[in-house]
Length: 118
Length: 111
Image (cartoon, rainbow over all chains, first blue to last red):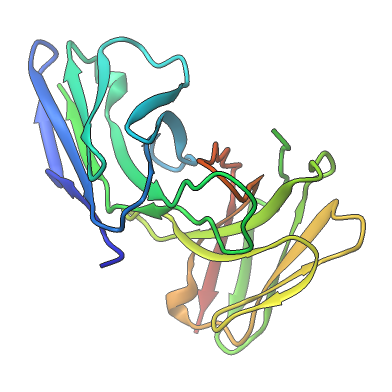
């Protein structure tokens, strides 16, 4: 199974709502990522989890709160978002093994959650 | 992190070979060069990765000169379904990766 799944596919929320995005992978990957992608723009890295620990936070506002409950799951909790936060939110995973390797360390991306903040 | 520069857009016709060049002048010794493809409203998909010389797989070839300051993705005999955005990135090949996507190249394949 080389698939990263994300739910929901679409989400519309008001600025006072609390919602969560979910991401799941069963490839045994040790690294998981959240990206944000605005229309016609490249994906921008938000968070990286390595071995279930937050390794990178790209200065993301606190209204976005990531959580990694176990090695297969990654959540992104949303609270008090702004209309400019509307975007496609992508989850990805990769093997994340440290040390020298000759194999590809590609990231597998999910289909994304299209978020609209009203 | 090394920054990459690619053409913003390219046009081609079905059956032609397409070559997309990427510049990465500040690539580090341990960086690998990786290309991803993205269709509208989908996540990026890995195409090919290399460190030096030439790498070929079932969908593309990647040419990297000895100085590694640039690379060329070659798509043989493109079809309409190859219309997408192609991103060139440089990153370590081990551990977790901090991928920095550039603007990418929008390839439009016409009949």
